[in-house]
Image (tube, rainbow, N blue to C red; front, side, top):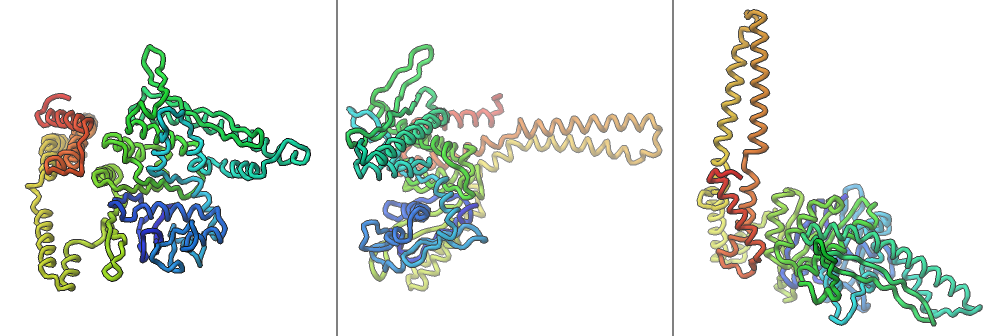
Length: 532
């Protein structure tokens, strides 16, 4: 089950109805700062979270006077809503001040909330946001973001509620005091089990980041209640460097020792590990990432994308990735088109200004929409802006010629080179097939041949079929060069083009350039006919 469409009206930055047609695909969104891309994140999160709230609590999101209000500042609170379309057999799911239909499908929404993951840059920031002198304690982070995912937030809320009455160890308070201690013991035990389960998958994710020499162990110091004061549990993080043949080197203050990219990889590995241990029983699973990879260089971002595409558990999720980084957007789009073509949709978001009210609003461009140069030319023509109309028509003509005359395009040269490089293999396959045809022709007078000759001909034909099929399989599996050409196309777009055009929005990282050099060297050896 997947989301088909999300409609947002007068919610946070969005004003009039904006319909995002996901078409049950994964979604990648580029949005310039302030364009409202995080509104998509919060619209989905708010709708799912509403499954645990009563109608009055939901209505507060759409009331200007309430401190929890998420309604657009300039909108009528009665004209604000979020609508989710899942599939044709279900009614649309709505939350607004005057209409709430999610309770009609509360089981689906609750299961989706429990199963789904919403991760943004704030999680990464909180993970290591400690002074050098401080010991890392992740319980506050877990209290805010994780406990509800692993099914023990209800228990913690009960504990917090009991503590508010400050029960004493007296006869009068005996029942409440015992209940509090029992719930604390149960919570400590469950949290211990959860943290213990996280450590192994964290190790596996770090390995995928190529950080096998970093060991992360999370441990618990139990919470308690004494002298009418609650001591929250502590979630400690022990980080060490593994050195072969030597003792591990303990890193006492990892927040000061590791660079931002490594800290982000560690925090993300722990977060993805949590995804493995929590409930996964919903027909609709969402993974929503909002500017999560800002602190990673491109090579590490590429690893995150590989994890998202290859991880067996994450494959089941409908992924919605939001970013303000144009270079990352282009790199991810290229990778998704290469590895998961037709499984993704792409959107761009910009800040627009309403002509009448002069109020900022989002402008959303959907890839695949027929909103190209001709449409823009017509719009400018209707607005009597004839020079602009002519300019867009010129762009369309240039585009059409570029599409038709692609020989001067470097990417097309790669495509032609691919054909030329494999041309001799195609001719060799053709020769093998011609041999089969010649032998088959000898069977035209088969009924007139002596039985002994017929048997020999059948033997010759069988041997030729086996040899031909074997050689064709070898050509396809071992000799054809396709992947190498695609790899060059990828670095061409993500590294070489931006640098040659002095694209200051696309920084160049050392690791990327090293990998590109190795790839191009290997590619040269293929074209020169040297053995690999």
